[in-house]
Amino acid sequence: MSDNRFKIVFDGALLPGVESTTAKLNLAELFKSDVEAIEKLFTGRPVALKRDLSRPDAETYLTALKNAGVDARIEAEQPVAFSLAETHETSSPGSDFSRSEASPYAPPRAAVGDDLPEFATLKVFTINGRIGRLRYLAWTLALTVAMLVAAGIISTVGFAVATASPTIAIILGSLLGFALFVGLVVVSVQIGVQRLHDLGWSGWLYLLNLVPLVNSVFPILLLVLPGNAGANQYGAPPPPNSTAVKILASLWLAFIPLMLIIGLTLGMNGYLDQLEANMDSSYESSSITSDEDVDQSVIVDEAAAQSADDTAEPVDSPEQ
Image 1: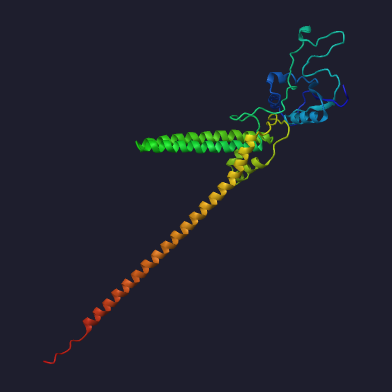
Image 2 (image 1 turned 45 degrees about the horizontal axis):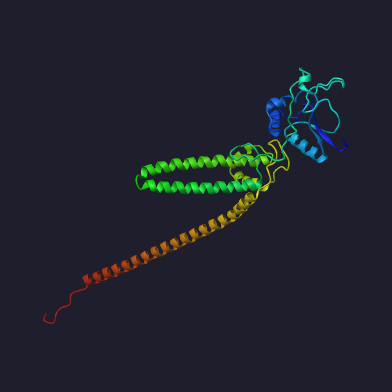
């Protein structure tokens, strides 16, 4: 075997601050295996997790293992006492215990590690796995369209029922609206957590959307920050974006500025309408005040004339 081939060796050591249970669960997720098979790797004896690798591939596997909390190392390819496919001690050349039937005392084999997938399988309705930026945008657009369609159906049903019984329409609309809201929140959390996993972050950080001010910046980070190029503690990277994903993401990116323009236009129209209403109200108030002033002037003039007639002295006639 050539000297430029390498292997990943693990002897059960963990990185500082990483618990054994956490590391085992991370390895089980990374290798798509069960915890029982992973337990056999923590014997304290060297185990070859992956063999016959180039230097770049070995670095990629080592990074994924480091993210899982495992203190593995890269070594030049050479015979070792233990491998992932053969977890019993190698005996003398004269005795062949490589087969389990040859030695009834050999521990079970732990055939994990060699099957590390290049890309993970997409899982939509779960908090496990990873999704990239464009796929996050595409799924968000699909979720928004589905919500609008469902809201339209609920409104149509509500209006139809309202003609027969307004009370039943209110109750039915409230129940369906609440169910739609819960479904929207659940799916949003699932795709948000998968996006956080792609960044190598814990899904619990999604709760930052509930923090004031932070929730105005945090969603932008999910759209802007690139995910981990290789495998991390949450699994292998997501598969490449399909044409449909790219189209949906482009539509969503075009939809955001369109909604901003529509919002600004509606806001400006509302402001102008309010300003015009205030001006009309002020004009009517000034007109009413002017009319009242005129009426008061007429009343004052009439009162003055009446007072002058009452106080005028009578004039004697010529006959007197």
